[in-house]
Length: 359
Ligand SMILES: Cc1ncc(COP(=O)(O)O)c(C=O)c1O
Image (cartoon, rainbow, N blue to C red; front, side, top):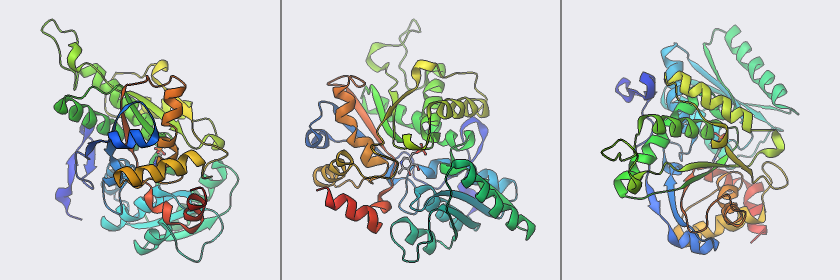
């Protein structure tokens, strides 16, 4: 990778340019009709952001890997589920930056490749399969791999699950500001931004970005007297759909990441408690395909040619009718769905069969 691909990002932090900005913002009324939901629907295509099929982890890794390079690291070590999108994108980001990548994957060894594992292996990552019961055990297993590599002379950067740490979240503070200026340019006033929440970094970053926008007036057209003009005054509320509720309580994690992110970019802005909107869309458990998720995957493909995944983006979009029914989202409102990617998981045999069986 060329050094000119490193730029100064938000808060003066170093950032790699792995994706093309801005990611597209598309008006998708047919998708809303197909889902039978009464909102004016837009889709922010972060599934198209970055290399290796792209997805939300790239914006986080742009900051985290830039920092690893600055610190002279030669190896990235991270962790996730066997079909982790974050692991796949760390494998690709590390490869294009000339770094070694070790992935500690939570599950039994899989000999036959499918879904994200194909790309993990093609990108040259070393895979370590471990069976753990808790996050603590998985983190300990990841640290053990890093310690062994360090003992062999490697300089490791250990990235937590989902790169959900304040530095990674800066990528989504950035993304929120990018969205607000797109909306402003297009003259669209969106009230809500809906997305899948798994390890909390995306929502933490988006909330930090919203606090930054509110503090600076970014994207908000000001009337002459300094009050926000009504024509362009909306900063969309961030609505996270928790797809990993079975793994633990996410709210405090999101809030802590948002605060850490704001501190990192040198802002005194804060996220108020009422700004955190996190609703449960997990279904029976993390990674278990639901009928609503399978329906959203089918409708998105048939109406709009958009590929969703069964673990994150399918469940989040599948929750939209319920969010309107339940009053979390106002009927008739303008809504942006942040498509966070994940489509390679759809091609893992277990997920592919589970989705097709629900048709
Ligand atoms: C496709 C996809 N969407 C959404 C998420 C959730 O993002 P976060 O972990 O930052 O909450 C993930 C996380 O793994 C993901 O892979």
